[in-house]
Image 1: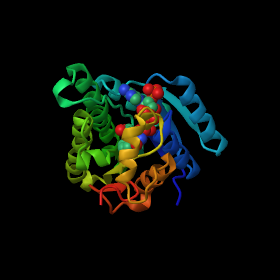
Image 2 (image 1 turned 180 degrees about the vertical axis):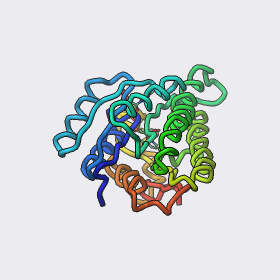
Image 3 (image 1 turned 90 degrees about the vertical axis):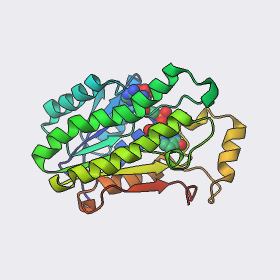
Length: 247
Ligand code: NAP
């Protein structure tokens, strides 16, 4: 498979799953726009690693939790590379806690970043993609968005929202050559899950038929598959990468 000549933007491409997605797309020949919010050094490392694979890669700072920043990010990529073929909405945050004691600002942060960030990056990107009559959008959801998880009500709502958004946009954009799909990871070893208490990690492991966590590269392969030109007859789908967790 080849992405030669395609321009790809990965939000939150600086670390974890986003970095692995950048590297997989770079390996397939895409030009990479690596977005980050605050971790400039990590973003530079990702871009450098993409270049080591022979790809062109540049970093783009933007906090996707604001609609204007999402629009400015897409415009910056368009100005730099002239087009956008692949958008991977990967940037995400958690603010875990019980529903009864949740703080409004934490709920806002999670919904603004995970759901509205995805929404407004898509909104700006589909204007370009519609003109091109071509686009591949891959959104990061989560098994938690399908099944729920105690202590993660806002996060689960954001990730379930991403699935609704993916399906509605898939129908809206199908006739324009744009596919919209989601990847739903289970328990993947990144900074996001490293902070979980041992008890929570063990509880998670017992719910995975494969009895082990996944790696960012496992998710990257699924995202890259959906971002391929050849995957053009697949849209509105949610692909779980979870060792069987959601089965
Ligand atoms: P991570 O290691 O915590 O990395 C998060 C990435 O998102 C970083 O690159 C971070 O960049 C970026 N980011 C955060 N807030 C942002 C913002 N407002 N604007 C732009 N970028 C922002 O997370 P991860 O585990 O790789 O997760 C990636 C995605 O997969 C998330 O959407 C997450 O919800 C989803 N997911 C993860 C798991 C898992 O088990 N790890 C499971 C299911 C779903 P900076 O460092 O620059 O802030």
